[in-house]
Length: 353
Ligand SMILES: NC(=O)c1ccc[n+]([C@@H]2O[C@H](COP(=O)([O-])OP(=O)(O)OC[C@H]3O[C@@H](n4cnc5c(N)ncnc54)[C@H](O)[C@@H]3O)[C@@H](O)[C@H]2O)c1
Image (cartoon, helix red, strand yellow):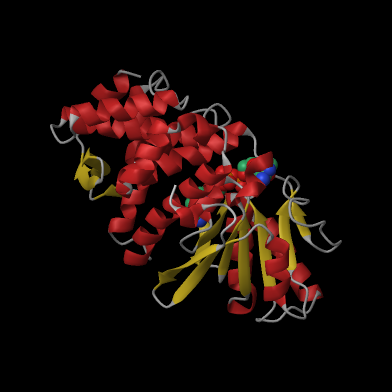
């Protein structure tokens, strides 16, 4: 590993989003940093019940929501706004969200609308939220059955990364985030790919130096895309590799049966299969990647019970453009493109499972 990634060394970098930027700060002591940033007025903390004791005991008027995607609701945003009003919070008061993507998205949304935007620090505590959800300014909640339908672009002033927070994370949640790490590697970081391929045991065991390296490299890939295209008008869409099939599978299936990461891993394999069918994707690359996902324990076959319904669900996916399904495909590692895919090809690929 490069010496600058040794766990004892502090590290920070800035993600610039057309004018507003987030400082990504690595520290072993999030609470000390938060106290320093907060100044005189104590911040309002938002946790879920699994993250409430991870960095500090919550004071009685912290907001603690129940865990899970089902709680990514407007009602909890309203609770936070009430607490802020009770505390007479001002625009320069600080909200700190400590949790996975649910708490980060919801807390950031609440901060973005209080007095049209108050100070915000995120402390992501899942691998997924460290490498993905906390970075890039997207906030939001689900509403009337629509995922992330209410939201805003509101980058946190600081994202505090403390890899030891992942020690208590269940392995299934860890693998959920690893699928996005693998995706970032194949989009734009060969060295990360080699590390994931050659040091799998250490990656799965969360060896501290490796963990820090995969988080940092993965964030750097996402940061590069969001800096180039903050509002996702073009190239940021590459980050959705595997997500059209993945979302379709999630929307049809029993949500608890397939995690988001599992759906994305499967979706990437299927997207590459479609690319091979169309003569776009190098077949040896598609095979190598399938094997990598299998070696990490992801299921790459046998999830598509109803291919017709899956194709229909993919068509409904929001990435539909002009009546054609615009897929994200790869020619090979690091070479990504948007392309329509014909229904017949989708069906053929999904009929394999
Ligand atoms: N804003 C974005 O750009 C963006 C990007 C990707 C995903 N997301 C959103 O992120 C959400 C998913 O995030 P997630 O996968 O982190 O799920 P999550 O927030 O539901 O967390 C998963 C589970 O892990 C628990 N947990 C969190 N940290 C823990 C820890 N350190 N130890 C033990 N348990 C812990 C949580 O309580 C929860 O039960 C989705 O709502 C998705 O829409 C947002």
